[in-house]
Image (tube, rainbow, N blue to C red; front, side, top):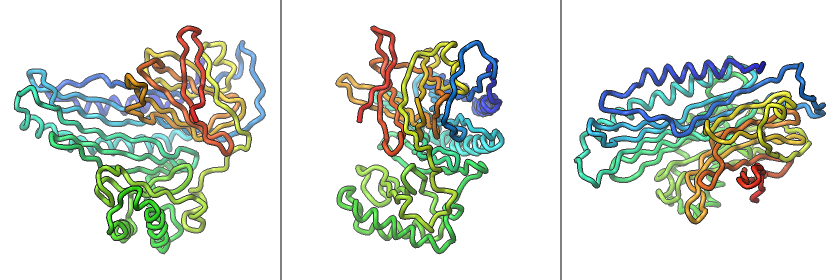
Length: 402
């Protein structure tokens, strides 16, 4: 029998309860989420009829985060769409269930706080709807993508997008958790004293000065940067694999066309500024390559444990595995246009690492209309690949793109 951590059951119950609290009124209709993601860390039994392999690489237990998007469509009594409301929810897998539960609850509460804004926007849409054929439904989207996921921290970058009939507004935010306590991290939690705030501000200005012309930064951008650090409560930051990032939403220090502006300070420049326990953990120096093969019960039984990731419940099921060790795994979904351009890309899953004897069991659509990409670190190299399905042969392969 498979042993599935009860965290997933707990998460499912929490999500069901949240959905029950927020049932739409009689003039709304809630749609089924277009993307369904579940992750299930599975430990294989010690006794099995399949032949077990001996693995010589010991790695820390992986931490994985899935951030699927739940969609709600609100209509009037005549069936006209008034508002599309999209939010991320979180499915988290880690060895300490209590910590995972704490992070999950905090994140769900954060999403729940957007309901008031949603109700206000829906009321505005009802008032603005004229019944004409030129009506464009209002849009409200609150989504998050993983930026760093490991045994030390979980950093997510969020984007709040609103279309209220005139133009699109985007505001970015972030949330950072300690993977050892589950608590939300402030900037003051990660630095070696309040006096380091000024050093961080100078480093950010130095990075942005080099990008000033490329990003069309405003002439007075330094003043805005300093104001973000003036009280030591700057919450517009996140950890990446390579450094500490500070970000600015459109219009903060640059025009809308520049998008979100990110200043990344490499970890080597942060020595003495941030606490030692917030640097990325050292990785096993045994670079591997991720491969894919079709899922079957006999094959999966050769792995000691695996994570179950369901993106499309009716999709094709396959295994991702490695010969040695890889880290910083990200799976991105997207679509292709008629001229093969990638659009609507969204990082839906991140895992800290994958070692020999471990696998990720993925269920997803892989066809001409759906694109599935995976990036990961192998030693000192970052690998970017497409996950490809050959309908003629039935084979699934990993094709490196860069």
